[in-house]
Image 1: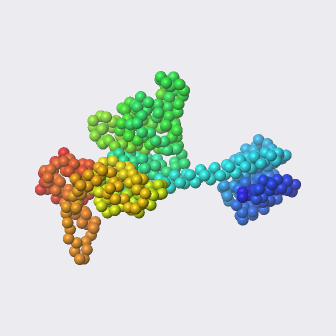
Image 2 (image 1 turned 90 degrees about the vertical axis):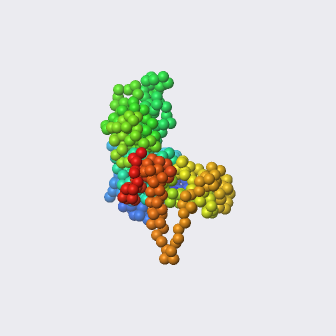
Image 3 (image 1 turned 180 degrees about the vertical axis):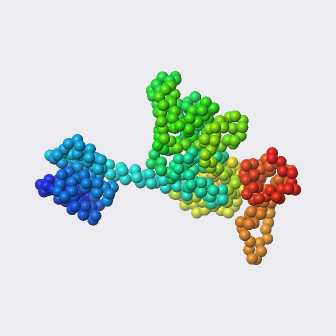
Length: 470
């Protein structure tokens, strides 16, 4: 039952309102002045307060201000026989929901209190929805504990609550949009819009209009003025996905937005000023695109203020079991299927696969397995044929090597690191030091291989190999 408090120094008004609101099944409390009302508010949860504007000891405006400090959710409606524009404005500024002059219509009070309660509920739902969205996209919810992902988490935490431009680099399916959402929903712009634009999915001739808007008649089919995505993202964040596919012409206009936060819609001479944080992403090698003059160098450096490299799944194999279990829980919960885990042979198949589609492909594979299996553990036969074929034809090279584990035990991380070093050196020996070919043999990106060589400090071990920069 909702609680309505009546605060009025006139006993007749209090009694009339109390009697009437009780017939509507409200829990009704009454107070003769502001001090009594605040005492009630300390003890009770009030949903709606009908507050007289002129009272002894404390006027209605001061009472509303103090009530809002104690309980921001309370909806205040001002009642007064001294209605003026000035007092109405003051009351609304103090946080009043509505303003009524005496004498008032009881039927209108019925509608007004019901509307006030709806407003309060909607406000609560919006707050809860924003909280759920923020929780969903906390950076902690990006799954992984590999060194590569720890670096990503660290960067997100450091730059989320800034206005710095971020460029997210990585193959398709590595989670670039999830990082974008984590950045936005952990920033001071979290309650403002996050607008996403896939630059590769919109035809070049329409992308300029989509981003910056257009005026009626500016081109065939422009039958009305249209605001662009940058206008929609004002005070918030815009995510430009696949930025590497943007045309040279649009790159010039985007550069101006980055520099001055200004642009003109298509067919207009009026400048729009916006306050937008830009996050961009691409699966292209941007330095190569700049060298080949497919992407403007000045724009690249403007975008690349904070680069975040998303590692491919094959370079964070240790995260795979964690991701599998995460997706199992997610899809089992959604489908109601009683999936208890993954058989060891099936996990071996998943681990041996190269995952060209990265985390997105893994998510799809796990979803398929859960949907098609009502209960029990996911086995090899529940996986797609291409994964099973890879398991037979391309066994994990690690299974071909055996280790003697001493009785005293050994360092797991140390053994894995030693084996990685051995693989890298053997690949370079096999390819006469050609890093491109060695990376291909190990199914790694060349940049990943080079970074591993530096990180593991293997340069000294390469002295006997004539290393090619190819």
